[in-house]
Image 1: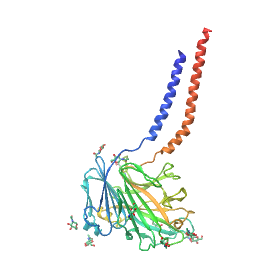
Image 2: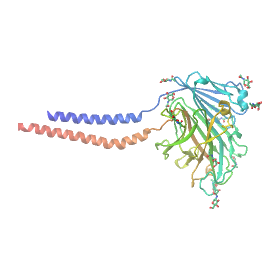
Image 3: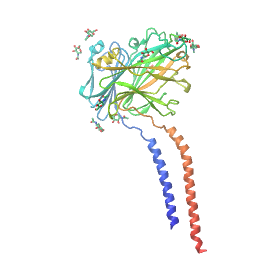
Image 4: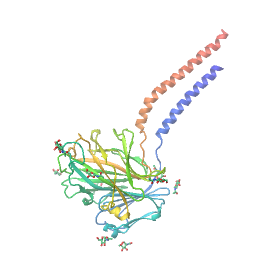
Length: 399
Ligand SMILES: *[C@@H]1O[C@H](CO)[C@@H](O)[C@H](O)[C@H]1NC(C)=O
Ligand SMILES: *[C@@H]1O[C@H](CO)[C@@H](O)[C@H](O)[C@H]1NC(C)=O
Ligand SMILES: *[C@@H]1O[C@H](CO)[C@@H](O)[C@H](O)[C@H]1NC(C)=O
Ligand SMILES: *[C@@H]1O[C@H](CO)[C@@H](O)[C@H](O)[C@H]1NC(C)=O
Ligand SMILES: *[C@@H]1O[C@H](CO)[C@@H](O)[C@H](O)[C@H]1NC(C)=O
Ligand SMILES: *[C@@H]1O[C@H](CO)[C@@H](O)[C@H](O)[C@H]1NC(C)=O
Ligand SMILES: *[C@@H]1O[C@H](CO)[C@@H](O)[C@H](O)[C@H]1NC(C)=O
Ligand SMILES: *[C@@H]1O[C@H](CO)[C@@H](O)[C@H](O)[C@H]1NC(C)=O
Ligand SMILES: *[C@@H]1O[C@H](CO)[C@@H](O)[C@H](O)[C@H]1NC(C)=O
Ligand SMILES: *[C@@H]1O[C@H](CO)[C@@H](O)[C@H](O)[C@H]1NC(C)=O
């Protein structure tokens, strides 16, 4: 009788143990977000002919009871504007006469104005080049005259679905170009190429690459100057968080988030997020990865006047500016491959956070699971043995 009870409790504890392992695995695997948005793409809304000075792309991403408007424009410096509204019926209205003049606010409006929850713009303002003769990767050393992106001649937008490609070059580039690719998503997923950033339906991805241009010095390295423009809560500081190093972004342990200052416990209304890595080839191997660094964001007065979108949408914007520099001391210079590519996310709400990938999970499962199964088997054996011993003793009195 006692033996039977003991035996049952043995079985039960093994079962509970197994069950908790399985449920732990399940909770690690799930966490996939099923939220979706309906996308619609419009080029130069309200204009019958391609406007002079560059295209304006409008991607509408409609959720259950809100809308994200992604606006991407090459009138002046290339700019992405994200506007979050609390209705599914908000619209974008452009007065092309005013918008093209680029000298007053109101050329582009999101209506109704009261539906706007949050807006932020990211301006790609300058490409900086320096001659790193002593190989110190110090971007203040021998700065060459900067390239103003508003002065580039930009191509028309090349659209394929919710993805747009924009390439341009300075008049002084003998060869090559700087390209920006915007992708907007209807659901959570991951990009095909490194750093394989995780995106959601609330974020868009921008990939920037500098391909085939001839550097002006023999030891050239580059920086990109970015401006964030916002109304109520501009992106004012960069937080660096630990991240998981897995097969999606090998050897990178950090993620950088450019976020607004938020007072209180309410979550951030928006973000720009990137992994601090760029790649020296379009189809990179691990050794083509090159770390990048950012400078502290600095407030800038006057607003991003070089951007048509910022001029058209904001009346009195607040602007912060930072540099992202590519490459560290001792690493190959730009001329080694004449290619550099970097990616970032721009979104509303909280930024997506990487969780363990299935590969890492199965490795962990094998690594942890095997000893656990052995333990479990060991437990079962001990139980079984106790039972035989118990039954043996139980029968003894009869002999
Ligand atoms: C939007 O819908 C979600 C559920 O789908 C609800 O929780 C939320 O309160 C709604 N927000 C507004 C502003 O109506
Ligand atoms: C656009 O702006 C111009 C100049 O301010 C104005 O004259 C014109 O009426 C506006 N057009 C529309 C359709 O509002
Ligand atoms: C904007 O520029 C246009 C053409 O360059 C000019 O006619 C107009 O007066 C300017 N408006 C303002 C408010 O500066
Ligand atoms: C960006 O880098 C350039 C060159 O080093 C420097 O002159 C400029 O002040 C930097 N801007 C910011 C915001 O740090
Ligand atoms: C490079 O190093 C030399 C010798 O140490 C020094 O004189 C020179 O100023 C350095 N150049 C730069 C751009 O730092
Ligand atoms: C547009 O992009 C596609 C791929 O994204 C490319 O194959 C095509 O050549 C591009 N067209 C132009 C005119 O650049
Ligand atoms: C520009 O590209 C052409 C064709 O790819 C190449 O022959 C030429 O050498 C390049 N010029 C420079 C300055 O790199
Ligand atoms: C995206 O935004 C919607 C609406 O604001 C929200 O319900 C949803 O949870 C967000 N999804 C993520 C992954 O942040
Ligand atoms: C944060 O909020 C509290 C209470 O709402 C206020 O007293 C404080 O001044 C705020 N701080 C900043 C920096 O805005
Ligand atoms: C790049 O420039 C450096 C310095 O001039 C030179 O030593 C190196 O050979 C160049 N690399 C390539 C691939 O041209």
